[in-house]
Length: 105
Image 1 (tube, rainbow, N blue to C red):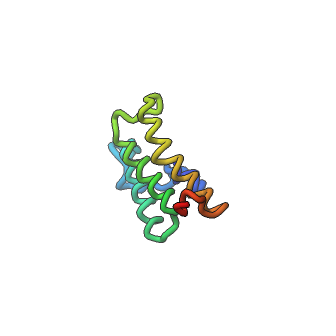
Image 2: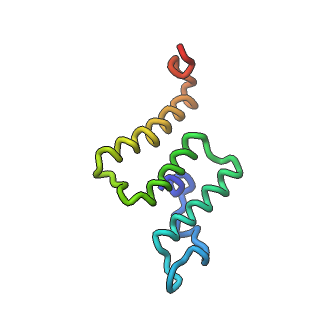
Image 3: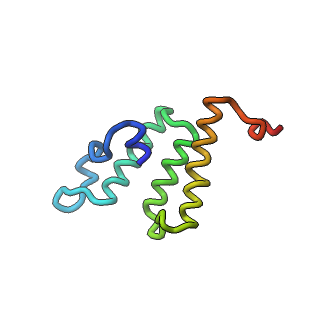
């Protein structure tokens, strides 16, 4: 998960009692709730770049999609287009400045 990589903390550390399911055990929804709460908290502090925020948001949306699978070629293509390319473009712009394409040249 991008949030875990960015902050070097596993999502399990962010669970609160309200996130837990039956028998006080985490469920898939528990992790979604924790990630959403973490995202909103960090977003409110302005800690994310535009592309990073969009990438995390898209990943959370995909979590709820029963057809989301990296073995699905069409889905993999959307991951590339909606997550990887924007993150790479933003990184390159921050490291090397805008390209002629970004400047409209």
